[in-house]
Length: 124
Image (cartoon, rainbow, N blue to C red; front, side, top):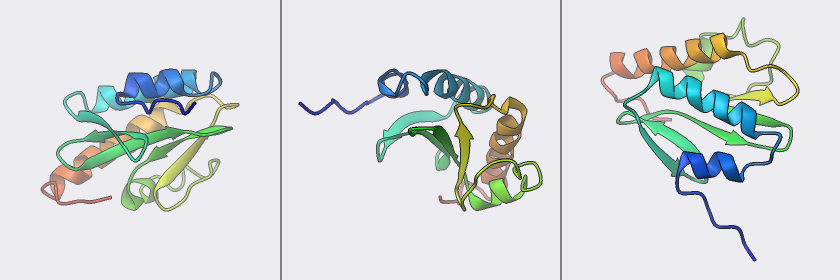
């Protein structure tokens, strides 16, 4: 029988693998503290923060979780991200390493300021 898809971020975290849940809870708390008024939703099976455009998202995987941001937000912290796997839009956060709270907060704050500077016209 197929699992029911999560409709809230809390459901998403509860349905994630046990190893992922502490990282997801911490990541969610950091992002929520940076964007407390952002709309929370599930899109494409991932938790999203929107204000009113895409701010950031995250997802659970077998050995890591991803923080989805914009290329500009990740590029701004390229030096600090050298110890992490990244793609154009994603930062991989391995479960076997401590969550880089300060770095995640910086990326999230940068993304918030980026969105506001561009008049909410930035798309993912």
